[in-house]
Image 1 (spheres, rainbow, N blue to C red):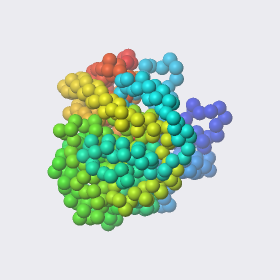
Image 2 (image 1 turned 90 degrees about the vertical axis):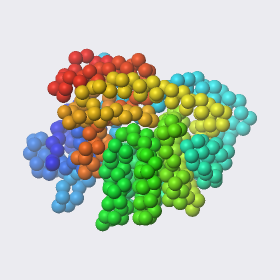
Image 3 (image 1 turned 180 degrees about the vertical axis):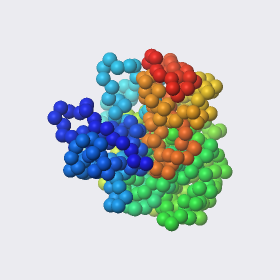
Image 4 (image 1 turned 180 degrees about the horizontal axis):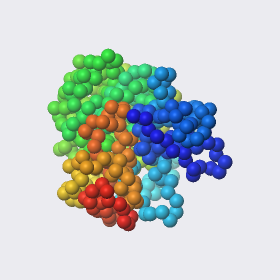
Length: 473
Ligand SMILES: Cc1ncc(COP(=O)(O)O)c(C=O)c1O
């Protein structure tokens, strides 16, 4: 299907038409109206539709292509390839409706700010403060790698500090891990709904992302096997076995074993993203794939979800023979993790603050999850509510499309990421597993604000898709 485009008229005064067209494409992707793989009109058709000259459209498409938003293939057409950002949804002016942002998967805040203040004061009193002013080792300082290895052991991954590579956040760790495994043109398998940041990283490396079918228990092993046996053998699999983003599924033990067995048979490398892992209660969290298949798994961790994203602390660990390559990728991208942030993270990991904040986050999220389950549990629009990590997934009945839910929420002043953000590839959008929306419950400023927003949304969904918003929250 070819999507239609409108010309934006809210740009800078004097913006040339070609730039306004390119901006319309960017805005369409950011709002979820345009999804990866959507076909854009031909140059001639769009020129006719907008009443502009054909070279203007050609120039606009060229600009959009340079910005990584679209790609053209001779004989096939022009397609959306851009990875969405949430930019447009944050651009609200003053005086607009109160805004509850459930589109960003952020952690809740308790005494974080006070603890940061104390950590900064303590760091300032250190006699070797000057160390923070220098370049550091690409893989991270030895002491910091030790505290990272101890933190990873909490989720069941026993690893020597020498095998831990520190990064500036989980997203950076992902890029480093993918960079170690993938070459341009390689196929990376992911769940059919996946973390958009993983798609971005794969895209800049020139890899092709192919989604694998999911059901209520996560990735379907038979579908994974079929993808491995296809014409282009995949090189790696990216997955989130704990608290999958966006569906909140935690893979049961037998699925983990089946995935590892298939990976071994087809010599598939695994990138296991466990940034939410420690938020899953111990008795529900599964054995990490990195423990089941240490010879082929790169494990990604981060403190963004468990503690706070501002530290930009991430780590990647895997088979010993890859450590040097991971270090080289850190060097090539950032030289070394920022010493100031790494120092504060290390302090929190070693003095018990991290463990305390994690326990607090567990309690806070459990309360928020209970509210979501209570409010959506018998909402007529919702087939099932799943909660894990920092988010909830509402599985929708056929009467509602994910896009209609996002629209209704928007009119209530609640931001939700369009589900199209998470589609691994165009085929993923059509599968039944994609009929849902993600609510980032951790990101609401407090529990009462969240409760008001969820109650308003549940009531609106209960009334049916023709409902129009009365008042915001
Ligand atoms: C599954 C997943 N992996 C990685 C990241 C990146 O996290 P970080 O803030 O550590 O870069 C996110 C952030 O939303 C995520 O959801």
